[in-house]
Image 1 (cartoon, rainbow, N blue to C red):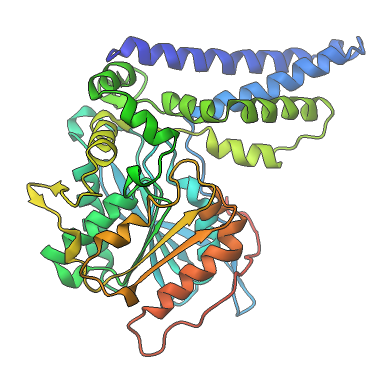
Image 2 (image 1 turned 45 degrees about the vertical axis):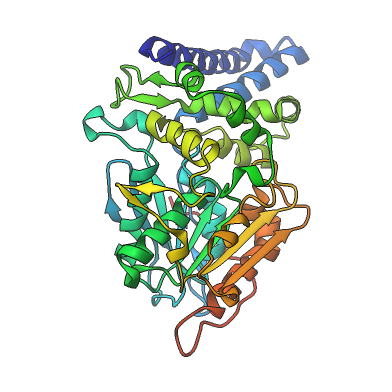
Length: 429
């Protein structure tokens, strides 16, 4: 399937469905339709509204939409997004709170490159901003990166993280969420051996597949059931002529989205059916619960073929991180070299993507790290999304992570432990 044709067919199907939705909505909006007093017309308009929005969101990167932050000085401070490092495959960005003194807690959020944009962590960023200086890895959509930019695989990803951490300095607390957890652990070990003074103070790994075999899920079962040749032939396509990355081999975001939805197909079908009925009755709104969630969930990005294939082969199949045999740029990364960085793992009891045990496996690899610098937490009744952006994160996990950061601070007077602070929401356009 490594053809532009198949990539363009998928895009054509998406575009056609968006057009059908827009046409149905426009048809139902004709004044003459109101004279029929037929409920079917309202239903057609509602179907068109939901369908158009659904398929339009699949190719648009969501805005960060970070609100202003209400601080102790009684003022609302707007948040400015600044690029610290710009690279072809991803940037390091800083959420600078205008008019606020730099915070003692400096946090780097390592966002997943698993089909969604870094904006998936918007709520995580908002929850940390009142108490931290927040930085994040903002990965680029592979379809927009020219072939001339070269390759990008798990080793390149790891070296990007190494450079980002070196740039931010050792007074840094890294939080890796989901997919990047094993590579962030590897990047920290790389620094421990090559440049120890650049290591972060703490490393928090949330719901990541350090050892996929520790507890099987549908994701790990799929990785074991197919060969690399089958994946390359069925999942990899070439970007079509519409985008700057024309000709680049990618794992399309639309394919990843299809796999996400198939895991809970009945739930998603019910959600869209209910939304259509709400729209028909005039109960839906632009920022209701359904649209807020699916505007982000449906916005997908392509991954480079080499990153997708090397992740499956080296992290899931060969378990190179779990077996401590991972190699970066010709150098073996030894996780036991981490001796000073405090490490905490966080898992959700009901996580069906990275099940409990997969992330905690990192602690067993840290053979040279004192037990006093190791910590773990399993959040009861929490799923995958909830452990970094839902109620479980806000009410329980976030305070624990901040306390962990403070307990391992090198300052004589660590930042005070805080309870979750609700920022005043004033949208910045």
